[in-house]
Image 1 (cartoon, rainbow, N blue to C red):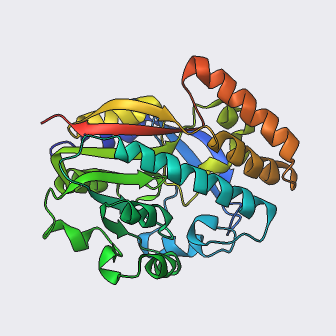
Image 2: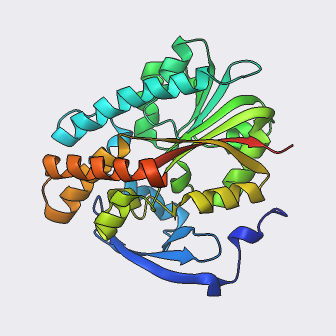
Length: 298
């Protein structure tokens, strides 16, 4: 695909089994996380075929594709989401952008793009899930703001965006190498790429092991550490200029992890574990989820 592909296509002998996890959301199938010792990247194996991947998102429990507020976990998710949107907006408004064009890949139900639009950003979103995209269209009120895949933008929008964001989306893409190449094609040379992903080196990940909710197999096909994300993006001509924690992720992920492990949310235990994880991360920098701010090295 590209001259930068070596880091993702190394000899399979560098891979070893790391952990077996169950799909707690849809299928109850078991998947193996394979560790690449050379990069620290974990991959979900077997990887579902592209034509079958969508069925693993077909669940009312997959909250990021709905605006549900029915259950306790739904309400917590929506509260955290609303707070996070304000923080995300604050982050992009602080960037030194040429103009104010933003592409949000995996925009879900469109809440982040909606606030960007209201504050003067020229917005575009990509959302492949029909249900989520329809909810987003109702909020944005213009179908031209959304497309269902990145190929719709590649020819007509070469290096068009000041900011590209992927909020907990990179771990879902079927072809990681291809995605990064596309990101570089769409981002202005002076632009900023913002990637948020779970961190399997965090304390809550180590504590919950195979029950850690942010493994979320097989919807999460890739599982990153700080080392692996840095190595991969450096190989493709990006550099990380800043890393920021997502503090509330430790609490929400712990809530889900408690449910997967015991069948109950156990909010007190989850709060304690999230607090411990964040406290440890102040020293180690290994937060449950991290935001990476990247620039091209051109």
